[in-house]
Structures are given as structure tokens and as C-alpha cells.
Length: 255
Image 1: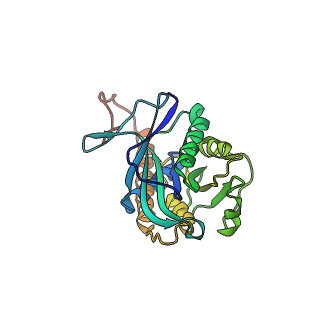
Image 2: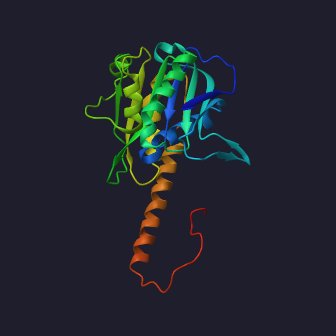
Image 3: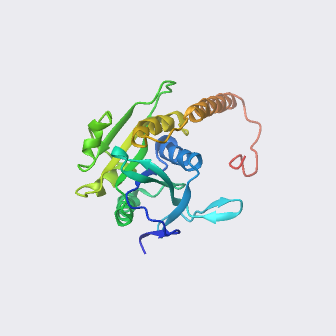
């Protein structure tokens, strides 16, 4: 077995739009996808398994689940309001680099088999400096989705695309399924909720009846940034303080 999507419900997804959020720079995709799933109270419809995935499961009140999951919700969406459902694919693991191309192919094969009409991946692009302003958002697409770039006034990108977005778009070449990738500048060292809010706002015109308040995400961004700066200050202070001994124990991983 290579990669397999296991359906958990028999609901038809024909005509749906799918948003894909995987953990890349700033965890933009993961934060945005998780926000959609919880805000829209979506129902799980499938999960993905693969022998090369890390041996990881997700626990919710003691019940385990697969780290790559698919959720759906009845919602008018897509160009010209042609879709009747929104599907969200979310991952709690970062797949190995050697698996990204096959992962992109498996996602698109499943989407085509289910009759999904549009796939949008949301990603983060790393930036080194702190910036309290809005992240710059760019978009790229396969030929089938290229008309959406001008229709929705996306800022287009030029250059080489690698990683998860590269694997997805590579496997979208020549497919009739429209595939769009929306990328926001994000901090490379910690979850960037502001960038996640920005990509949600960029995708929002494709979901005209979805009224999402991204203010909580932007507020969370301020909290994350303040906490990170506090930790950086603590680390700098600690590095300047002579050490009298080593602490023995598991550390602060689970605090």
C-alpha cells in the first residue's frame, strides 16, 4: 500500500470545493484549515493512511484519529457559486520531502474521483524579519485554474515552487481539475496566525456566503508574537547568565 484515502461517510462530494492546509512555513496552512474546520463545525468524511507516514496519531479526549483528515460542510462556494459543499483537508504531520509528489497525486486523484471541482492549497512562504503589517499574498495555478487569477484579482507569482505546493502543482499539470495555490508571507520560526488570517481573507471571495471573522486569528497573532518575544528575551538572559549546573529531566516539551 502506498497512500490511500479511506472514506468514513458515504456523502456525495460532487461539485465541492476543497481547501488543503498542510504544516509548512508559519504553519499557515494548518492554522487556516483548522480555523475553517472549527468555525464552520465541519464533519469528518475521510482520512489518509500511508506506510511512509510517521507513526503518529491525533488524540481527542482519548480517541485516536489519523493525522491527515478530510472534513466537509454544506456551503455555497466556488466561482459563480457553482459548488454546494466545502471540503477541507488538514494534516497534523509534516510529510517527508520524498513523499510530497506522491501525496499531491493522491490528493488530486481522490478529489477527481469524488467529483470535486476546485482545489485550493493555502501555504506559507518564509520571511526572516518581523513585520507587524499584513502578509503579502500571491497565487499560482495550473492552466485549468488560471482564469481565476485575474477573475479574483490575485497577485500572481513567478519563479520556482518547491515543497508541498510544488508537489501538488506538479501533479496538477495537464489535469482538467482546477488547482490554485495561495501563499502568504509567514514567519519561519513560529506559527503565524496573521498570515493564516490573510490567506483566509484572500480565499473568502470564492466562498461568497461564508462570513468569517478573522479578528480572533489576528488577535492570536499578537499573543503568539508577544509570547515568542518573551521567550527570546528569556533565552538571551539565560545565555548571559553563568550556568551552575545542568537540569536533569524531560525538559519543557509538554508544558
